[in-house]
Image (tube, rainbow, N blue to C red; front, side, top):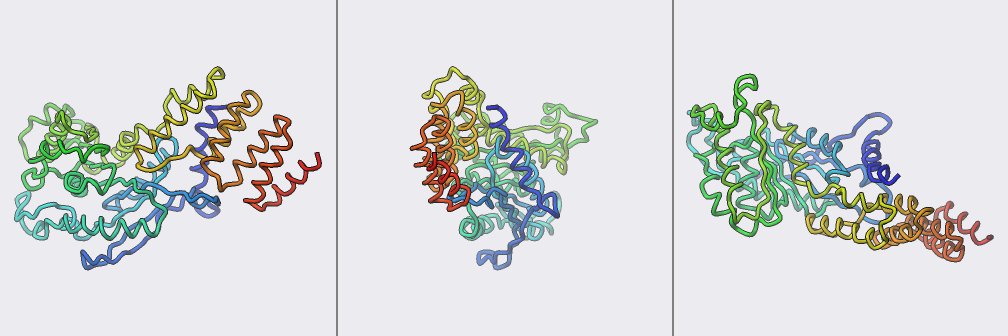
Length: 410
């Protein structure tokens, strides 16, 4: 029963996405005028379905900002739907449109020639202005309009991956986690690799995470050995080798405080690598979020003390709060369901978790109603009346009214 309680939230999250006419509702278009860029910019927004739940406690969410939103927005939403809320937290998704002015907005430096041509890079080097737009216009706009927290993630592929890495190195305060998918680190003679070692020694990267993926520049039925690819000196492998050099430097800096991982996908090319990278990247960036086996073992163990249960909750949610940058409470449904699961066999644990429920969500009737059931199970009608009266005061529902009247007659 405990295992069912711990995993059931995934089903309810998925089921909540559907409505009468559509299996899924994904993405609302929004347009913001940028004074920095002197133009309108389009974004796509997806809010978790749980935000629509009627409660007395405001629910806020981390935000995933994904560049090239028209291309990768659906992939991000699909991965989140698969992994939340058990593996990673529920999140708001903001897809930033980059179909126009892509080279201008996503490159950190201006060059006069790249890949043997000059015309296509004549507007390059606008990355800092685009960063200014995101930092000082888009993020404040999203934070004002939607239920956000301070925890943010930036995701980008190719040139957008180059932008992600530049943002990390030069504006690390903007986001907590970064995901660069087969990034174009070859740009401007690998300009971002040049001072990498010096910059990553800075303590400002403490608590920050970066996941980088690399695609195979050759067809997967030809060459898959990363050591062979690294030694290849042809132009075809130049982008791959730039990413590999960056990854080796970032991995080997002993004084780096950045949490970093890279993954080579031997069977994926530049166009197919984003989806699997998003899935693996989210798992890496939030590897600390999933309930540990130790936490679950304490809840499953009938011999575990009440203190052990309290300590398990405190350890898990203190860790989550530290990583997310704000107070994270145990999930309301988790506490409520555990309270009932323990009620008959281990009433002390039931009282403990229901007390935690009331403490975490004091403005919701649910915890008080469940605590009244706890006291009913213990034959304490006086306290059962006390708690259902509080629930009725909050909800004003006919259910709580009838429950209160029934208890008062006993």
